[in-house]
View (cartoon, rainbow, N blue to C red):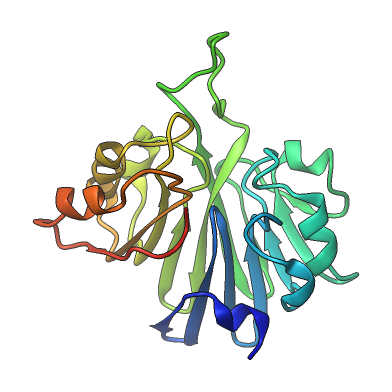
Length: 226
């Protein structure tokens, strides 16, 4: 058994082949599509990346240590690995493709859109948001006919109402840094993904989200992403 096969995985069909999503934990994902290995926010505390496949593409949502982990990056990054990241991340990681909110790029044949990810309510004692507007990214990836949204660390911000045709969404649910279950439910109601994965949820009970969205046409899938 390969190391990544010891984690939970889902396979989702697209018009261009199956997308396999492996749930490594916290905000960390491994997606396999047409033989390409795509990592989101590799983090050493949830996996031994030295045992995992090398990366063809890495997405970094922001510069916090549980999302930008140099040790994990060093394990999976190769000379020709593509990295899509924020300007703040690029101060620590050289050779990546910097995208700001609203920008897009095609990498390995995948269209990648960077969208806002920030706090409105949750702030540090000095009044600074945990995730200031304009610094972090969420990403929308297009796999064939399937649009997948990885929100990054964010609250239920107004920009989510502009998201369209999202088939699969990952929304964070840990306090005090991102959202309550109620906020995640409100975010999901804004853009109505077909499948919703709460992720990066720490000690929050994901069952609360299931209850909040039980009357919505949204399939909430709970996986080990605390």
